[in-house]
Image (cartoon, rainbow, N blue to C red; front, top):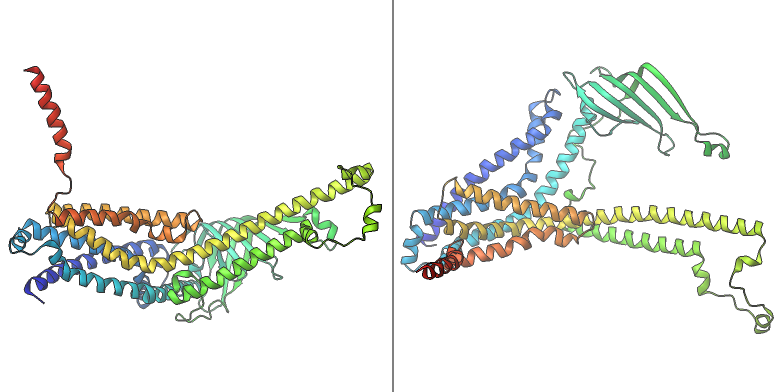
Length: 482
């Protein structure tokens, strides 16, 4: 390796490492800020908190790595141009393309490492992170209830509007759904203005004391025809106590792993296998739905007509245009009622199946997005380098001033387009491939444009294109006045 290559690589690595550490620390602080309400004041020991943060760190890398490469590239090449080191290299016959060779090799290796990291480390860390959060919530019952959403605690689904108190045990705006033992949904709903969680380390019973609320219960009549009346019972209370048995809930090892079915926890091979299974399941359900609809409409009977003797056909009278004219008014009413009921039933069936199929398609899309993301992060390393390096050479500014402005603007654009594309493709508005790669498709021409202008010593904006027509107009106006 030549002295110049070592110098450029050393300069870039020092800048890249510094920027990466600083940005990683900032994003870690953001993670702590997001989960501080769940962790603070819950009597969690230091090793548990450190393990929690350790499992959450790898998910930050796809955000930090491209931004670090972009900012380090702008700063490194901006410093070289600002200090006239590029001018010295060019005077010695070394072009920008030649100067980019060692760093391009480094970025190639870094992109491969980024892909391997996204394919192996991030799914494993996500797997550990989600299971660890679940286990914390089980070991610490106060954590099992989250504000603003239903939380699964034993046989109850509990939602609270606000938690307060030293250990988050004072609850405001409590809604509880008790699960049915026969698996047919929730038949009991309890609503209370406020409540309190009371637990004892010596006991496996979590006591939930509710104040000023109502108790609702759906009653299932013994007679089937009475079920259409939808009877229910309602009672009010000033104080109501629920005892939740945590003996099974708390039999949890902090390293035990149960959740293992989210797309972010899978590598490329697992995602490919899962997608194949999901496609087969979707195709099977579509075929089954089509067959059921055909059977309900009687279309299948048309493909297998009953064979009737020729003599019998000759004896048959031609059917009238209005088939209902063959029946009396009472029979017509019955036929129309049955037909209307069948149409409504089929419509409900179609709507329900449509929602189910759309949900399955969204699940498939999310798995495709998780698959493509592993390749997008590798390409993003290349993309950000070939945007940052020529941009730094053009603006000729190093340090932490103008480079940060450009880097933040470009990265926000990249991240916004990436998020926008994923959201649309998640809702099946775009194919997952276009959604995942949209940001790369948009910014790749920018990288090509900047690289072309930097290698040909052209500024970022050619002001002559703007000023030349203005100068001609002014010159003509001045000549007319003379």
